[in-house]
Length: 399
Ligand SMILES: Cc1ncc(COP(=O)(O)O)c(C=O)c1O
Image 1 (spheres, protein in one colour):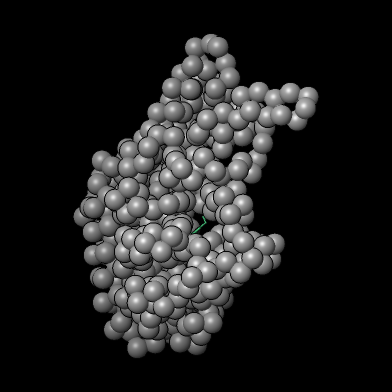
Image 2 (tube, rainbow, N blue to C red):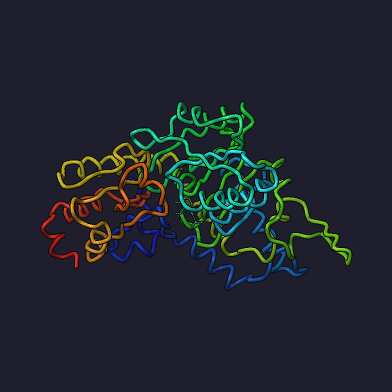
């Protein structure tokens, strides 16, 4: 039991929030850090020669250090972005667009989020690069056997989620990186659902690029991280150009860029976001990432044990490795179930969860998704189960 509920103003509203895969609630310390910045030293970063601006510089760069320590990266390998989507687009557009050639192959899976599919589709159209999919096994997992089967001598990149947002399976990242690197293949990890829930060590796992979002880990919206090994970030061409990232330029269109990491952060950064994310990282670190993932797994098993007893419930991912459970109720549209639960102040997600190509593998187009976090409780699950258990009640009240 992780008793941190009093830290979250949103949890004082008698709400049962099971949509943490979409975004998480924010603890007071994060909200206070943002408030403090706007109220007490609201200057720009890297631009002013006065004390509040200096304070911003120090805190913004110490936020970067905090992120770097959290994932065991070097300081200049952490680029602040607006989120996972932004990071993945920068990786595809700024790095791979310049090195991939016609008929090179990019390996994805059919359970990737749109943010890890569409930037690659764009490269496929522009460069005639081929997108291929690593087969998922019967439990919707990626196995090393299937990774090896999918690789050809044209494979240049494997880009996959560390944990997926629909079926919550965890990928064998360390083994994938090891095998990929032995075959000169880059590995990009979409960490949106991984970094908030499990300890990630980019060096130990030997990840080439990692993307994640602050808002899914108790931080603010609009801030995210692009991690890349320094040697690769050096060759990542800025997708955005402007102030803050150039050293100088002249009339002959000559532009001299700053060193990493600033070179990849054009324009005024999301200062409040970075400061809030740093506080969120402190907060999660204090709880302990191992405690977080352990608690979520216990809650998940508890919920699955209860759901499985309901004959009209089809669980899509019985073998989920995380706090994500997707299911359907026979004969009832997932959105209707979400609407019914919402009447009882329970928030779940219904739909295809941005992984639109997964339906071709599972045959399931829409589902109800519960995604848990460390502040969820067994009592919340009991209440949810008692509402789901009564199918007649759902049918009567869903409209
Ligand atoms: C696996 C995965 N990748 C990428 C994203 C996109 O994250 P963001 O909207 O914060 O950019 C999400 C968001 O739900 C996700 O779950």
